[in-house]
Image (cartoon, rainbow over all chains, first blue to last red; front, top):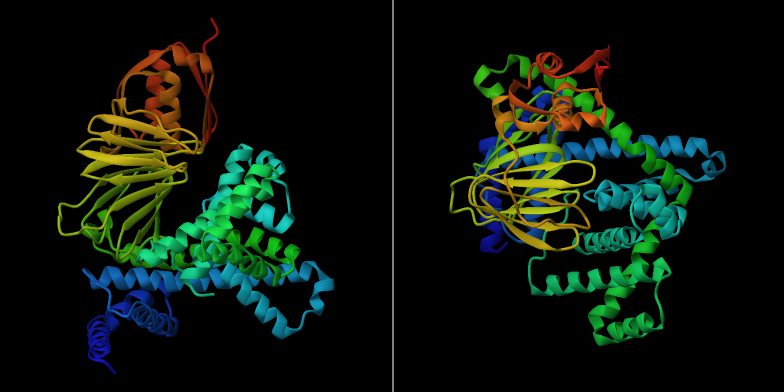
Length: 176
Length: 328
């Protein structure tokens, strides 16, 4: 292990030792469950560690509590978002019985794909996202999308370029 | 997952630019508006560099992602997921209510850091205002019925105003070199100094600067500096020149101050703090109202209106009020 890697490990260790009890307590009071609090606290530090490995450095932290709260929030949001996606997916499956022939393995793969695409579309404005999905999933021409979301056709073109660029960059950043 | 970080180095910047261009070309061809000149230009662009060629190829990769799940299935999943997600978050919030009740009074007035309120996001109910102290020392006040996401990264401090109105006092800390950016659906406002407000509605955003200046950029990429004492209105298509005057920030003291304000505008403002609908006849714009009103007592404001003007205020329900000219 290089000296810089050891440095990162040491800083992460300090962050953990000094703040893990606080984070667990905060999560416990928010979630009302010790087990969940422990799991999410763990996920939070794992996410920070992963970030260190990807960026090859320890982040500059001015306020550990705010920083940990930010990361923990992302972990929580991802968790609840995935729950919501899974529930929505299963209901959508139930509504189309002919697709129920999909094997359990295939369903898992599709769910993973949905998590990824959902994350990819996060951060797009409501109208941009709508326009993009209408084009991508329903193949609607731009003129029709324009009337449907009540903007000009040139706005639809801009939205599509913006959304597509965002997705492409997302793929690049996350190496997928 | 996180939102996109800005490019970290020159290579990433070039890659991003190539991807932006590829996306533009794709949108042009999908629109059906491309002509022969466009096709020639595209071929030129494509052969210009390996990077452009690579970027165009990425579109196919993107398409493959979408094809993994049958389109109707994906569509139905995405149409119901937001509603479900909100229900889960509400669940989280209800449990948190017990925590809030036990918190000491000083903490209730300000919320420090995240993991409070709605997970990672802030919102105010109708008639509520809230003050946030962000991790960098910036103070943000949320006005009635507002929603704000805070996204601080290593190289920028970004907040996303989804609806409503905020007042920002950026921190005095000169050591924090990260730009401070307010994003709305219609563009971004970059703080170059200290105190300003941003308000967003369904068709435009409005910036008012009380101290120093900000840089406003709309979705089209047009930029304008807005200085102290001026306001700028913008949406996707337009960006106004700086307009002399600023919107009142009296709401931070829970007051609505009217200075020769058209009555129609006054009633619209009142409805923001009251909730529900305040319907009014457009001719009421002819009347002008002046005075200071508490935003916490909209009934009193409506009574004052009825007393001062020849109008009738009809309370069809608590949340549906109509104001019409009195028939003599």
